[in-house]
Image (cartoon, rainbow, N blue to C red; front, side):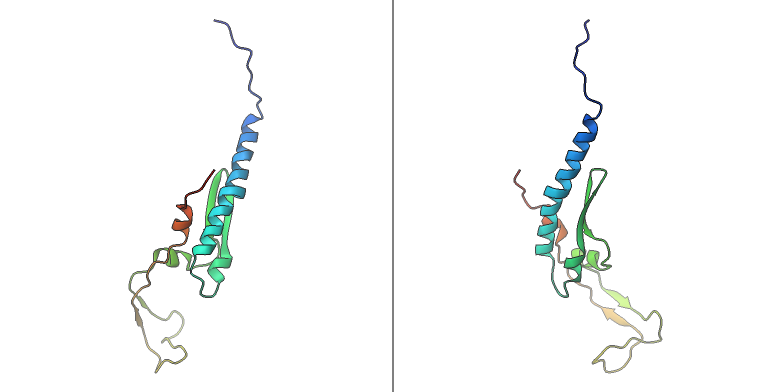
Length: 123
């Protein structure tokens, strides 16, 4: 059986990987990030401003790197008890008196990442 004279350039994989990374970051990532920023609940703007899109090894990640309540906004929280960490009681402006604990009812989910991800994208 004769061997074909077709040879694949060894650098082709690098070029394809670079093209995939560029497409993920500059097309899909930008679109998903923009939609997430449009969908996110804007109270203080901190979560909105913390959203980023990044690509490493052909993996796109969109979300907040430094906003500790990002997941709570996306998924909501169950009812939970809040207790003081460094003091004996909790207090806040307009509170009648300090309290040892607060029964928090939880928060409803306000999804912004999942709706952004599932938007129909035209090629």
